[in-house]
Length: 331
Ligand SMILES: Nc1nc2c(ncn2[C@@H]2O[C@H](COP(=O)(O)OP(=O)(O)OP(=O)(O)O)[C@@H](O)[C@H]2O)c(=O)[nH]1
Image 1 (cartoon, rainbow, N blue to C red):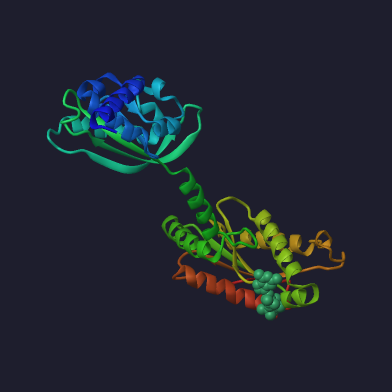
Image 2 (image 1 turned 60 degrees about the vertical axis):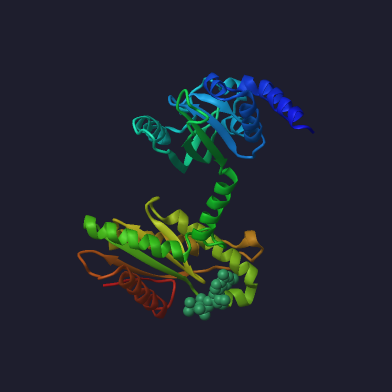
């Protein structure tokens, strides 16, 4: 193709696209610059749009239009701001307005994570960057070129991994990592607010025998059922139920004293004693029990949260040696 023909095609394309381009941008560029630029923008897989200093769309490429949920043409003349979630809106407006007063400085803002309000009311998460267009292109008025990168898939995977990293796969309770991290937080809150903090360690009795008799798969199902019961017995959403490891569980009860914790432990004991395993194909006479150890931090009784857990563990050991299916409270 000759250079002349190529130039003509670019100019033709520019005309075709002009419906989706605001006045300022088209006035700033020659037909040829315009055609090449638009062709480049329209061919990319990232959302690209140009706004003026009020945040009004001057140009929107097909991917940006798709991410914003409207057509290219109807977006021209609309403001970007309603498309930004209210938590991000002020930050972007401030940046644009602030930059207007800073002469001869290149603006490169972002990429930052933003939430986009799509026209249909749904919200997507994206990365948004804003850079000022060089004055050679946008001499008449300040224009900003924005790149919008869809993070929906990335975020969905990230959120799934985050849940997986904090959850015990078998039981769905918090895992040991979450327990350790949350305990540090609970501990700080308890010390600062001078409120008690109680931990209960719960260990299934003779679980090796259960596994040996009914098999490991039924053993897994038994642990799942116990976890469900423990979760149902914790009094509020502030509390944490976690799998401590193997057939051992932990419950953390903030702002809860020893007596209240004993009530929770008794409830857990009764519910577990009453459990039936017929739903997993075992005879009605199959029963399980748990031993529990309780320790309560109040008035600086323990120096660290590890010491609190250690005290609950010692109490648990006592409950085991007292004959199992028992609750022991640390003095
Ligand atoms: N099915 C299943 N079994 C597990 C899992 N984690 C640990 N166990 C089993 O739990 C049993 C724990 O046995 P022990 O430590 O001897 O304790 P126990 O038999 O419960 O006896 P006491 O605690 O003294 O009452 C072992 O047989 C482990 O294999 C698991 O995820 N699934």
